[in-house]
Length: 124
Image (cartoon, rainbow, N blue to C red; front, side, top):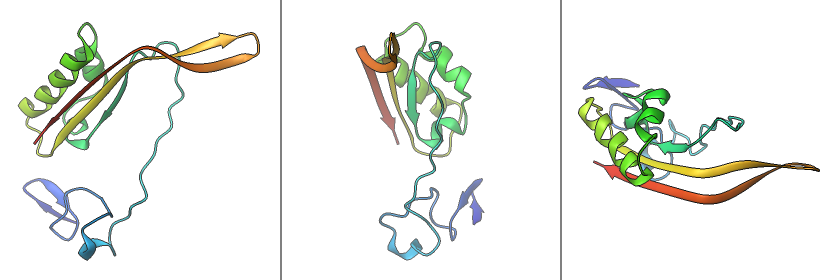
């Protein structure tokens, strides 16, 4: 890994760790994703999928505060715009989803989706 313009790059070329495509870097990258599982709870109001360009410059609390009180379409645009104005050095994309709830039943808990709203925005 070589750091160029403040960004770590594989072999000085690749700024993200992707193994599909970039055949010349196949030996040093992987197509196996990094996955984190977070249990949902009733207080979770949004699901945000975003590229590292967003997370490099914004904290989860700041993203949630930006999304709260606006439509998710406007909120997704606002968090992408915020990452750009905060000086991210990477591509930025964000998908925000609401309406994912847990429903308690007499025989346990099941996930339900109702009144779902999705906001998507990509820049650079």
